[in-house]
Amino acid sequence: MTVLHTRMSKEGRVLIPAELRNALGLQAEEPLRVYVVDGELRIVSRREGIRKAQAIVARYKQPGVSVVDEFLSERRAEAERD
Image (cartoon, rainbow, N blue to C red):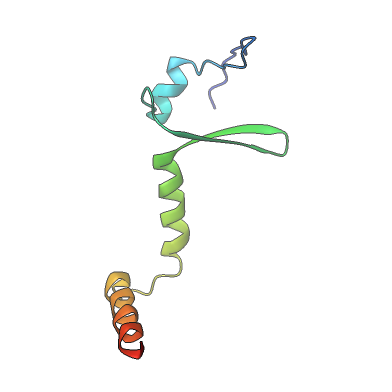
């Protein structure tokens, strides 16, 4: 684990050291999600948030079943009922 120190400015800005930005693959102006968990500030990139969401959803996906085909089939069935 890399531990570095930084400070918060009077305006509330926190500089993320370059070593940590590089380790996370963060780019300038990249959207970040910031939240508090158990008194800790967590910063998550959009890319990492999407990756985590995909991993959660993948647990429920049935092998060999196309989620897109299943969704379109359901939509067509709904349209026929209407």
